[in-house]
Amino acid sequence: MEIDLADLRQMHPRLPEDLALVMISRAALSLQRNSHTSPVNVRLDVDRAVTAGKLAWPGSDPSFLDQHDSKRLTEDGAEAVALAHGHLAHGWRIVRRMQQGESADWLLDRSSDGVRQLIALEVSGVASGSITSRLNKKLKQVLESEDVDQQWAGIVGFEEPVAALRSSEVTKP
Amino acid sequence: MSTDLLNTLVTSAIWRAEQLAEHGIDSASLAWAEVSALEEELAKALPASQPEGRIARRGAVRAALKAGDFARAQALAERYLAEKDATRTLRASLRQLLEEDARTLADRFRHAAKAVDDVRGLARWLQEGGAFGLAA
Image (cartoon, rainbow over all chains, first blue to last red; front, side, top):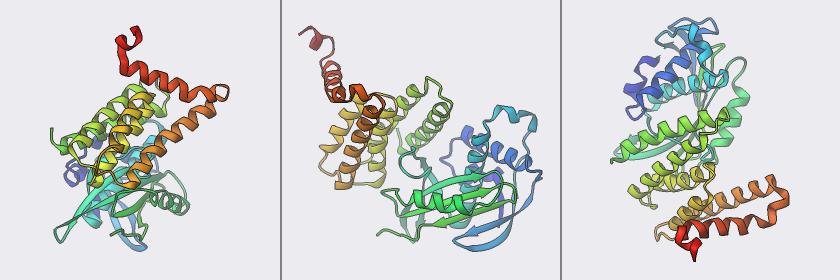
């Protein structure tokens, strides 16, 4: 699988353009500050099925790094990668952002055999180190989300590029 | 206005409110008030029988609380609780949102905790009555 963040807006037409640009720029800076250049090899994990892929992004000028809050750099960058990964792996499209308290960052949908399903996706980014404990924490969090058919956590690591999507394995009727 | 457009607007509004709130910017409460208004519009467009309608109703109340506007949050919650197609879980969630906010406020202002309900009731009475209510 090849993920090109330049296509994020085409993957998610309901994602506001200004937001998409900021998220892509923050993903680029998060990768570049870990000395990665586009495209980079990325480990892709979808419910423990691991494959090797490529992750590409439009370059971002590192002299603008100070304009971004460090935490938002990692979190918003992770959202760009996770949303692109979710679209390519499952055909998910953004419906809307959710408020803190809904136990997920994004409400997404997909159509399968003419049936629309709603997906809650909780995303987090890890600037350096392993993503395992964050994945477990976020999966537990997204289990609390209501009124959706599926609950997923998406974690992105920027040091050794990795994008993981894990479902709660609870599919409500 | 289409629900697609409202969803796009609420996405931008939530994102902006979150960023302002994270940095402790005072105008975050105005941004949350905008989120609440957009969620309310979504709630008008989507019935409570639909999952997205329930998310919007919780969102309208939650954002009003984040904006510090308890009277609006309570008025919205009462409107949504009265809807015939409101599910039991939606009703429970709406009540829980108001209760949690009251608890947080009581914890923050321990000495005034007993008066929180009275003060909120008074604020609501004043808001509903407006200047004429005050004059009466």
